[in-house]
Length: 331
Image (cartoon, rainbow, N blue to C red; front, top):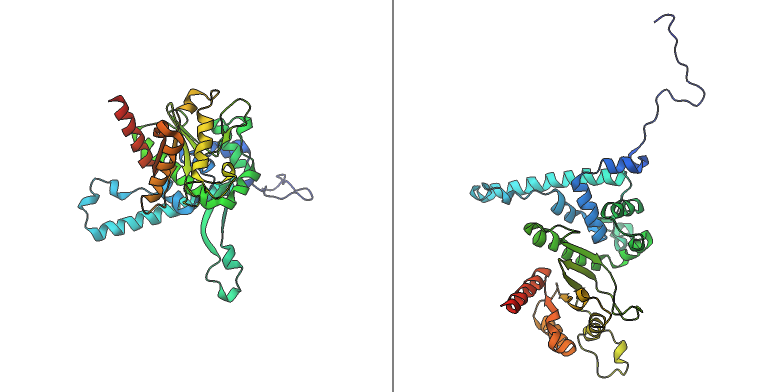
């Protein structure tokens, strides 16, 4: 319009202001946009330490069509087509959601195959495998605020990164946690952080001087019962060797049980610790020999108190044994 004033940008001033990117969003803006599913995933990732894309799709994005009442009446060929379609949709939704969380600065990821990268280019089959997700420092602090982690119990990013050296071990342990949460306790309405807790790599002490210590792979609390989780990969001998003089320093299941006994039954130990259950989970056991050998070692060490040690291939096996033992005791 003639005679109207037109704003002339000053030197260095753009006519269009540049919007703030997702990664530059304030901490509060990130929190405000997290859905209940985002929180559930981030809390699980904090406890699991790491998680592959396939598990994320399965636990948080896939709607199992078999749960539909009319699914059984559909011909098998149509069922397979429906399963494939649902899985494809779940993957797309997961990728979109994770890309958003990554842009917000709470996630980091890795999918490189170092052994393939070490080969000559013409010998490489592929250089990328399944994508694994981890929390960033921002993600760690965000979850710790959400679930109320005490200052002295907070994780350091350096510690989390160093645990990647044992990624396979931590993921096997994480699968036990996910089994408990989604296939055992969620179905009966048990609330996490109220009715039950899971603490990876938590030391327990037998006395006030802290010189009697044992470090289970995880501590699982269900109401007033504590389980000390030991994930057995069949790499440690069960009994101590009679040909080595320094038996107390040998690595063995029997020696580990001796440390548990000292920590759990010390006069200074709290009652909940004295009544704890040692749960050996042996996921790779093909035969029962390994399981029976651990049970025999428990009888040797704990004598009349070997009912404090349960052995199974899954956490479900251990819980079933515990509830059956409790039923016999009550009966």
